[in-house]
Image (tube, rainbow, N blue to C red; front, side):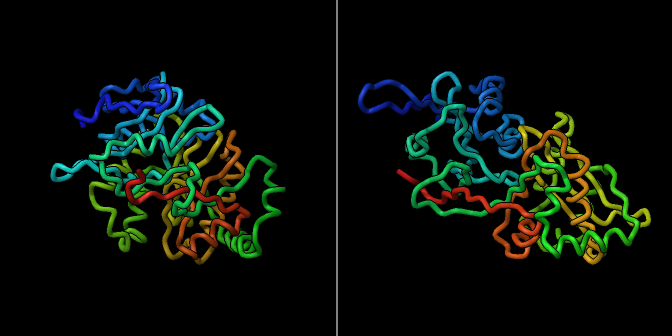
Length: 302
């Protein structure tokens, strides 16, 4: 990607340089992370250390002295450079403390030699495809939050209470193993490399004290687990797993309810990361979560 560095996008009226493309090695990671933290729409996915794991060759468009930043998860195959949304990274986009930003200007600044395969951004775009996310306001007391639960959630919580379930922190390896033994058998895109990236990512988040893994145990057996990121005022339901027993006795509902009640810390939002799969969408919405839209770009916008 070295040849992509230092491309400039100029304002047509003044000729003033407003956006510059930086190679990964050129990015000042401290300034980058400071911009992300201070932005109006901060997301954990945009931290430099997060991107370094999920997209090691990422590059970036930056306006001014890190006033506005736009990460580009770039890859290269058979000599062709392209942008592709990384695994375990729901949304990227333009990040800034400024109230408004011209997202299209950043998209136009992407060099034509880089093919836009897919990119999911939190910024709203006209005439763009969208995907669904689900966010639950958890700023209130747990009693008030529970009033929004559907009858199905309440039934499952009653069911879980009958089985003497225990919640405690568990290792990331146990979470990944539980997933592999169950849902992982159906998810073909998660290969050995993907699981390695996931393991490295969860370890880094924990080391940064920005997330923990919690498990539900029944008679000493781990039946449900989830990794929650907790930073920037938001808890992200990043990765989860369960077996058939957990679903039968409401362990997944029990885990989420207990996280909100006991472990959310200073989070104001529980971000379920959404899903276009109807059954998962219903599950997230059943806790009272609101549907939020984000943009999907899967072709060059010039």
